[in-house]
Image (cartoon, rainbow, N blue to C red):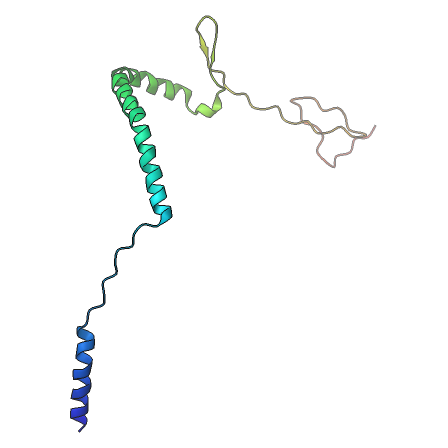
Length: 133
């Protein structure tokens, strides 16, 4: 009887395992995705002529840029960090000046009663030092 019951349960469960789950239909893009796709497509359509012009300009400039490359490398080696310089200035005669930034002047401590006037470049009295007059 146990064997018959086990066999009946196995036979009853077999059709359940043989059934396949329904395939999920691919989700259609939502309103947000369709809007973003349309926006990007319009952007690319409007930018295509400008991108084509830029590509053509770069192709025309390539020989000149290749000729300038060794000079640019030499200039970069001389200058080092560009942040150490002010913006270039072009003079009326055509000269271009690259001014190196100077270190800012140290702030002078405030003068209080009994403290001498600090001189730029000279260390002042340390805080807590007293001066007898």
